Length: 195
Length: 264
Image 1 (cartoon, rainbow over the protein chains, first blue to last red):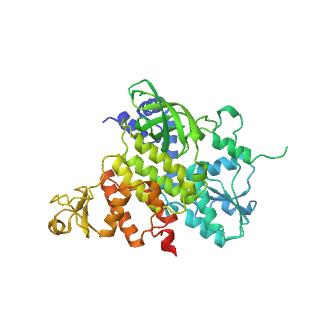
Image 2 (cartoon, rainbow over the protein chains, first blue to last red):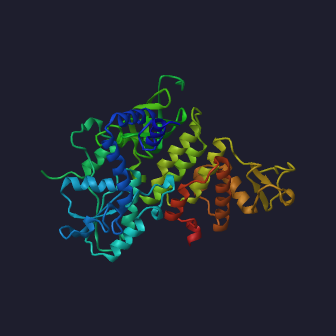
Image 3 (cartoon, each protein chain N blue to C red):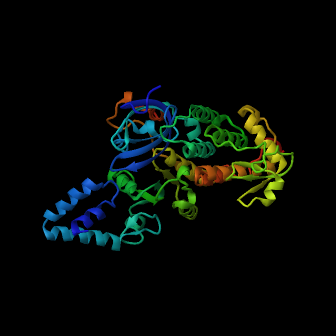
């Protein structure tokens, strides 16, 4: 196998990169100045060397604990529970939420055999029991697995006095009502607000 | 009946599972009324404004229009008939419905319709929110699932000597597909499980009677647990793998659930 075939083969490891895309990327790299190609290779190595999981919130970080967990400017009484590190990125982009996070690295998925012990759920319960949060926001995905995860966490924390909330669900901005499914419409209707 | 070889085909179906594919797609597995197991790609469905996303949540009963693709089929249109929100709002119901989904997925085959199984699956999903106890429903479903997919175990004659089985403890053999009498069982070299007389009676009763009859049964816990064990082993043998959803089912519902009579 020559070096281009090897590169194409390695690129197909990425989720969503099929043989054709890998081929296009490989030939793009071939035409690229060598300094740029080396910079890409170096960036990949640095990520693998430097990135770890925060021992408090399990988000990806280069410093341990992460900047969010050690920040004095954040609301230490609010905890937002998400499935993946990319969800933290999405929430941070809004600039609206200033509390802490907990990343589960997945959701309960009964049909795939993923239970509470397979994600960072016990760590969440321990963290909540040891901490001083007054609100837990269960921001898992809006699908069966995300809802099951949220319900399970709620069940585990139901004996505490902590307020447990879930972000509003409903119609996406820019969407048309006529195409909305019955679940989305029902939820949107239930969550209607005064103008 | 629409031929599966048509360019576009339509059917009612239940969404069993989906996995992410590419940047924004999902590969969705359905159990359908007219075509058995169907796997098709839902393009762009992971984007937030996708019109199909909400319709393709797991357990939804939908109508789908699917276009035959070169390698894999593509979902053209989907519309929800029942989102089973009453199931999805309760962990017990989710664990039970997911177990039934995994069972159905395990025995179903692509391009092989099983309308009887589909009807039973949907009617059982309809009943789940109103159930007080689960054991009878689960065992009945498992027994009928085996029957409707061609794996009904032999419960009346010994599969070794072919004699009518006397009322007694015997053995169950996965490989043989049913009961082996106590005498043959002692010499039988293959894998076998002892099964008590009362468990056999319960097994036969559920095989012959209706789901409503099964709900009215009062069964000792040891008998119910033995039947559960025998059925789980046989289903694992038929499907070729463990049912992953039993782990969550046991966690939420418990594997020592009793009938109402047993609780008193």
